[in-house]
Image (cartoon, rainbow over all chains, first blue to last red):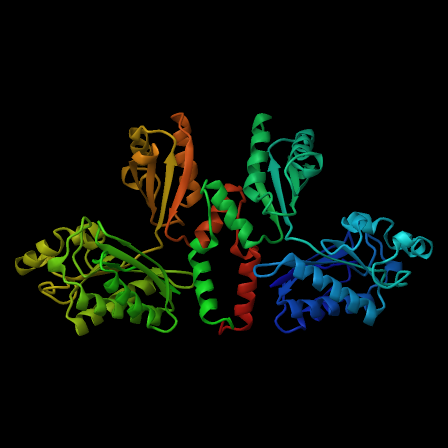
Length: 305
Length: 305
């Protein structure tokens, strides 16, 4: 199974978003797990999953529909973007590797350029240039800036197609990455400097926990502050590690945890390992969960399931 | 799906245990999840699961094979027992109720007496007499004691069949209960009185946490002590609640938790809710786990799966 989490530059016109969802769901065996639209960002995120072939086909149909109905020349929103289908990450679930997702991104990218004439950049694990690993680096300049920069700067041109962007659909930034867990911890204080300080201590970029991004924010209407985090590789740093680190730092500052928030979905493996870590089980194998064991045995007996 | 966890009075002769496992696995769709044998107890526990019909059939075949090959007159072991197939609990998994498991226990019980002439007692949720709810009350006197007691005491006679026990296979104690989680916490001290005191504070029978059984033990070879627990209803008291209660009581006594142990299997729901509780998520729905969501959507689209 593979998950795909495309971001589209349309968050206001529900008919257009619905047309994209329908294009994705039209592939047999592909399941739309989640969708969310934001009017200020003018952007939608659709999460779908299935076997690799179906997910690839659905990603192409999404690109095709989005580039036909979204015109970036008219698009205004607070979130940076470079394409109608802006970001197209493939994420391995149980039974699939990150390498397979890299290959999927490359194959779909070739097809998007070949059939739709929308050029493609590759990022994260699918990056073909070291300086394109980070999404924010690829997207710098956005649609308007890259439209002109591509004419003169070789370094700005897409990995496939071009040399310029598509006049209305821009470019697709396709990639492969591990499952990202968006997880926030709210603290019972209105002093945002405490949240900012704890965020700085836990995030990887300032020497904290590996594969953790963190930001300290005020939740003004609720009188709380928040450590808003992305766990980009839960095998490196899991939910329990992050929670216990933030708990300790909050306790040292005399602040209590009010509650946590999980944004979107989490992978089973991350959830199971978190319980094991909290319970201080020295090792834990998912086969100790009765339903997992039943599923494994059923699959062993009947691989068609 | 239903789980069944029969206990057999044979833990030494591997050929006999294997014959029983084969009888269970001979039913199409029934999955043997786990098995364990203990020579001192001279007893084996086999865990299997499947749809209700298959599990009922497999339970009957297990009773049939066990009563043909185990002779209680020759059985010696430290664990109390009254039958060749001694205890036969049915446990609801996702999608099944405890009431359905009670009906299964009663139906299989009727068939065991009808076809095998082995009488049956009912315990826990399947009990037909208030004084037979607890397994230890039903089993008091064991095979030898009940063999004679049944002749004279109406109160000792089986719920189905009899009035006496089967001369070599004794009686089956069939029942229905919720999933039992066997979970131990080891403390870094060699003072067993601390483990005993904490066990007394957390167990339901002395006013502690509902649906928790607990015992304090010394793990002499490791220089640790253990709170050995059974969680008999994780919806009433879950893993996180128990762990946090024991942690607090240990901390108050200046003792650290060394590690925990999960014995056998745990249900997915209990594991998922434990993470949510540890993370202080105010509510948690299993559909936030990506694999659960995929399974639900696949089943909705194709109920045959």
